[in-house]
Image 1 (spheres, helix red, strand yellow):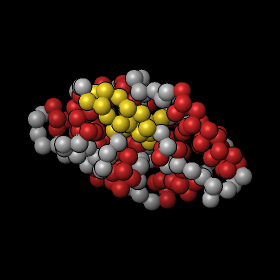
Image 2 (tube, rainbow, N blue to C red):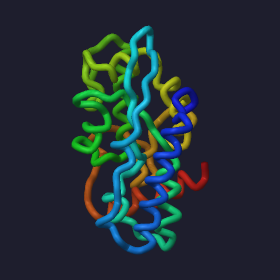
Image 3 (cartoon, rainbow, N blue to C red):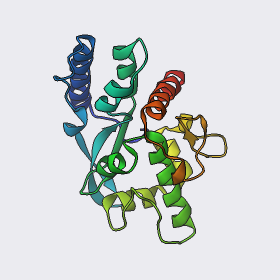
Image 4 (cartoon, rainbow, N blue to C red):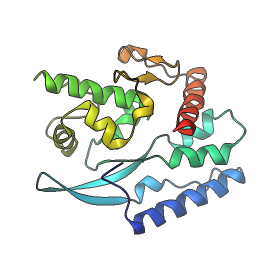
Length: 202
């Protein structure tokens, strides 16, 4: 992210954990993998309030291990983990909810945030499944003001088209609604393949 980069200490911790996971993947030892997102937190001031942010991966390692179908496993894992996202940390945060709602898929996470801004700008009741009212996440995304600002801030331009429509990474078509979400082996494998492709083009 542009304004929420990891400080030197946290970047060293994060990079060390990623390198340990890469070695484990090369050795085909998935019992050793650690979750780097549980280790990294940073505090920022948002509209006069101190908010703790924590890191979140574009794709979880268990999902990656289960559905990866390429030949460069450790290199592609590194590519995925180099895209660092940070969300406000609290109960029922995006970190927690996006797995339950969308199995951590970044495309539907972004689509849900777009829905938040559409209802926010129209002064309607939020229909977002991830951003709950009266939470630090709600306050933070309201502070960003628009979906465009969110995309710019998080540097997620590769996941939307020129009109800010969100791309379904399993089909490479545009997401029209929540009903487009699908979870099965074939879909998940296509999603992961196209996610890696997008990140490689960035």
